[in-house]
View 1 (spheres, rainbow, N blue to C red):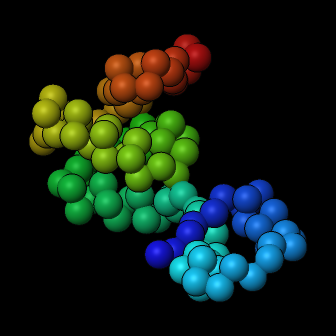
View 2: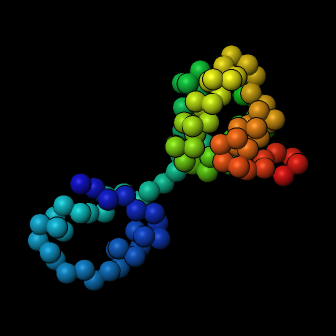
Length: 110
C-alpha cells in the first residue's frame, strides 16, 4: 500500500518521530506528494476525450475551475460529452458546467 500526501501532510509525516512498528511501517510509506494535473496534462486529456474546439479563454477558466482535480475534470467532461459533443466550447459553456456541477459562479460576471 502506498500513501500519497498533500504537501503539508507530507512535510508533517517526514518530520514526525513515529516509532518503528515493524510490519505497519513497512506497509505504509511516503512515495510521492499528491499533485494536481498540470495545464499540459489537462490539455492532453481534453484532446484525447474528443474536444478539439475549445476557446483559449474557456480552457483557462476550465483549468482554474477544476483546480488540477482529475475527478472534477472527468465529471465536467462527462457533462460536456452529453450536451456539447462536437460543438465549440466557450467560456459561457464552462461557466454553466461550473454552476451545474460545483455551484460556482465562473466567468466575467463572477
